Image 1 (cartoon, rainbow over the protein chains, first blue to last red):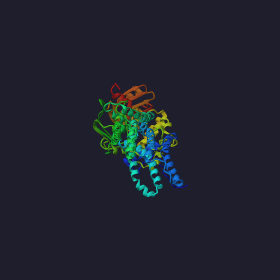
Image 2 (cartoon, rainbow over the protein chains, first blue to last red; image 1 turned 90 degrees about the vertical axis):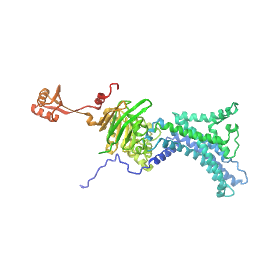
Image 3 (cartoon, one colour; image 1 turned 180 degrees about the vertical axis):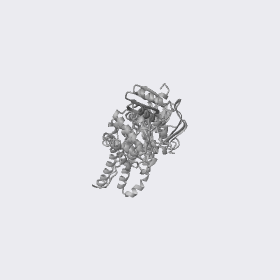
Image 4 (cartoon, rainbow over the protein chains, first blue to last red; image 1 turned 60 degrees about the horizontal axis):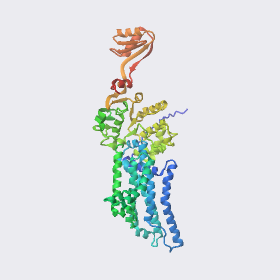
Length: 296
Length: 303
């Protein structure tokens, strides 16, 4: 018989003695969670359909355009490119961002309140502001990716076809990249802020998404009504079309015609839209802070 | 002397005109602490002040030596919290959510998965850890909520009504888990209006009523009465007479003799009386009161 003796340890609980990342670790965890949540990662399959469908909608045209441009340059090098530039593509991506915000913003904020998960955040090394920036940051990150990546694909793809060579074309068209980035900020804040604001106060995901989309659809009609009315100050009513301000900035940055955008039609300069978007963003953050400081 | 786990000096909190906590002075040592009181006594408000969610209207409070109103991040880095209501996202698996709860407390992602797995095993959810939380039963949800509260190995955990909604066997299992937490080096504050749960799990009690401290002390000190009861077989009056002869004050009821006061140790007096009379003993023990008796005895009648 062996004279060796052993010790049995209860492995049911082990104290954690490893590294702790503190407040910054908590915010990074929130960002990762936000990305997973908006794309339905580690969720049931049905949660993945909508966001990944929108990813396809945002990227596929860019991939097709660049692919066809390559094919065209091989088979008919003298032909003019039938594809629009970044300004046109931004219109398409803008619609995708609206559809994405309608789903992502409510899903980022409302379940935490409805399912009581805010209580978990209130016992972690973070403040109400950290929570807000974690959620706002996640939405901004994803919307920026929606906006930037297809445009970057087109920027690099078309540069590769340029007679001057890839490197020269990238440098020569650098102003396009700056325009894309400026417009991206306008679209992400302009479309994301109203979605976050509605989701801060809504009690259910579905109604929040519906309200946001209703504003998208109805507010231009009201703005148009204000444009046609003729009483003192009625022109200010055109600013109600909050989701058209990014469009004004896009037209301005890319030197496109403002067309029939109501606020431009009544004579507002583009900087009014810049201020409107900034005010909407600041108001959203302020109201979110008011809402969440009571619970976190 | 061991540093206090919780202290409060003149602590008050009001929701507008409604005063929820009224000038609380507390000093509570580390260990398993029961926070008892009727609904509306101020238990949850006190926990929210301890968590730093609410700021004291007057006075101050310290958790593990830090003031949550001034040093929120330090306090929250060292605590865990299991709220009274649900706090679980229905569309995540237990493993994913508990792992995320660990990450929120600063545990690196690569370690949080393993940590979540270990803790879910400890609370008895090993087999269910990859199921969605929305499909969990009430008992499983309570365990998952406890798991998220301790996954990051906090120094202190606040459990708000941890047995609420559980069936008898689920309640027993939850109380066993809570009792074990002290052995893991985690200080526990259990808030409950179910007084037997506190008696079962805690060694210190803070009793609140109407936002004021009714009692604050070790559980044994609160429930001990100093009274000894002995049950005999045919001869209660004989034993009682012998005890009275020895100078003790006694009461009899059927075959039970109750020693209320004596000059020495009442157990020694009982032993001597039994030896002198030769009456057979059936049962001998200290009579202890329950928290419920204390609470009902001291709380104002309108509760």
